[in-house]
Length: 278
Image (tube, rainbow, N blue to C red):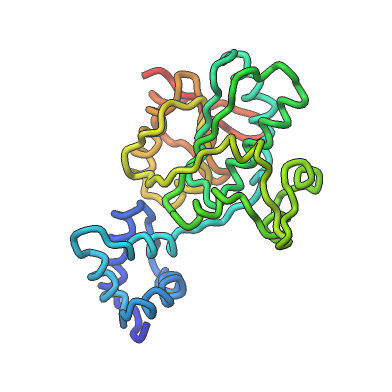
């Protein structure tokens, strides 16, 4: 990038990014845009952010759009992130859902799943529950994991992680139980957990064709959206939940409004939301 970002270029890029994937850039984030897009501009022969935006606005399918969205998406993740949602899953939700579902399939959606740590953590929690309480969860369990980024989904589908990634939130006991060592020095998630998860590319702003779920994890992604987009996404998520199904948000996120759709459920610690019948 040979020139500084002008206010007009920054506003045009903010509009593109929000329209494309919902991310709402704050004011004075030019430094973030420059650092994340510098290499892309150089590789595509653009001297300025304005040149890039004009390229992105051309009609028709443009593979560069996916590259730019990928670069601007934060893919921060770790195993069993925040701990308490997985405690709620194990101590409260799985016993309740197991009782209710009987032999029916348990379906869980992990939205904005990044490189797979969240859905695989959910799978491990389900496996541990089954081992600790044999016969309680009798039906099959299926986890659908989605993300807008094709590159992180490629990593997630492989289920292979370097030691640095493995060490972020995963106990030595779980590493031993659920991973196999690779000759390269990395670790591979075992088939019993990997086969529970189906990964799909999905933009949360677009139509969902995923079926119905008993539980949705949508954590640490709504913070990047405007209030109107949050409301729209949460309304759409409600349409995917079975009556009485649950929504789990991130630690810094809350569900303000939509009292006709969700009921707040206090846990110790944490809060989850139960879907009401419309």
